[in-house]
Every structure is written in structure tokens, then in C-alpha cells.
Length: 166
Length: 166
Image (tube, one colour):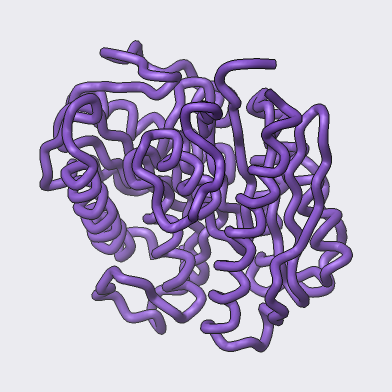
């Protein structure tokens, strides 16, 4: 493949911030993430960035049956880290399929460091943030730290993936 | 209706920020918007917040045929203000239908102040931001000012709409 790389995200704990960073980079005004790739070498397009915190949103928009959560609080799903990784992969694959993107990105985090998935036809990269938190009990500051780490880790995984796509 | 008010957004120029403000408010840690409603009186749930800057994203995810844009730049649609208002309404209705939300919110802005729509079964509120900009030629600072105004106007429209929903 060459030319425009089309990306779509389905995000939970990163609140659509991965999508916003990619879109801003593609439009020539990068936000807070320090990209290491050269925009002249990589022309990206964000098809869509979906923030989906709820079980019903997953079902209705991504159209798959979510893994059974450990807990559900006001329709918001809570998984452990192992299940978060599986769910992130499912979310990445679903949004990639629905939009016909070259790369799908999925994120979700309940109890633990969360799950991050970057999926293309060539590569499947699964990871976590560097910050442990518990959606049910951690203070907002910890949840925000995990989010920030998750956004950075996802974009790093994306950057690592791009050379194999072009 | 009483109890939980379920909201979903399909956003373009507001980049999913309306959704993030609603979700944060609903979780008890409001971000930058100064809400005037009392969280004890209004229990909100954000089902999903979709940032969709592209024509193909609209077609694939919201599943309707967009109005013909004035211009398309790398799959990103550009409308004038009249068409933006019509498109914002279509986006709000589509995401409301897909998710089964009580309230759907749509936003898009090309040339002009943009279009904002807040749709429930009871009310249809259509507005614009307070800032003129041209997606094709305005500096990023102006585009950001329009975005900020758009987020605030949309949340104000939502607050005005809520009493008729409960």
C-alpha cells in the first residue's frame, strides 16, 4: 500500500483523544503528542474517532456482543486487564471493518492498566498503558494519568506499525 | 420520561469535545464547561461520542447519504453555514436513531459559523457557534475559537432542552 493511510478508532478510557491527535497531525497542527514520524513520509487520514464508554454503545455502533464485564455501572463496562486487551482488539477490528480503514485502534480500561490494540491487515499490536488504576475506586487524577499514558502508548504503537503498512 | 437521560453525539468541528464534557459531568468531574444545571436533578449518560470529520465516515457509520459538499479535501467535507445546519440535524438524528438515545447532538462547520443540532423526541434545537471561520483558509487559532464556541453553544442548547425531556 502507498499514499494515504486511513485510520479509525473506537476508544473508551482514552475518550477519543487518540483520534484527535491523529486528526490534528494529519491537518498540520499537532497537539500534545510528540510525533517521531515525518509528516512528509506519512500522510494520515482520520476517518472517524469513536468514544464509546457504554455497553449499549458497543452493541449498537460496533455491532458485536461485548465480553461479559466484571461489573456494569450506569451502563459503563468494567473489565480486568486481560479482558480489556481482548475487548480492545475486538473494538479495533470492528471499527476497522465498519469504516474500511487501513488501521483500527481500540482502547478500554477498567481495573488495571487497560488494553490498547492497533490492528492492520499486516500487524496486530496489543499493549497496555503504564499506569494502574481502578475505574470503580481510583481518584480522577489517577484515572487521568492512565488515560494520558494510554493515549501516548497507542500513538507509539501506531507509529511502530506504520512502516509495515506503507 | 424520568431518570437517566441518555445522550449520543456525532461531531465534526467540535472533535468529540461535547461528548467528553457530558461524560465528565455525568461521572462527577466536570471539565471546562460551566454547567448551570444541578447534577442532582439531571442524571445524564453518554452512550457514545463520535468524531467524524470525513464523508466516508458519515456514510459507513451514520449510514446516510451526506448533502453534496461545496468542497472535499482529503475526504473531509466542507459546507456553507446553511448546509452545515442541515447536516448537523441529519447527524444528530442518525446517532439518536442508531443508539436509541433520548437526545442526539450533531455538529459540523466548513465555511461560516457552523451548524449545531440538539434533537430529542420533544424538541429540535438548531444553532451555530458565535465565530466565523473558513476551514479551507482560516488559521488554526480561528478554527479553534470556532470549535470552543461550538462546544459551549451545543452544551447550552442541551441544557435548555433538558427540562422538556424530563
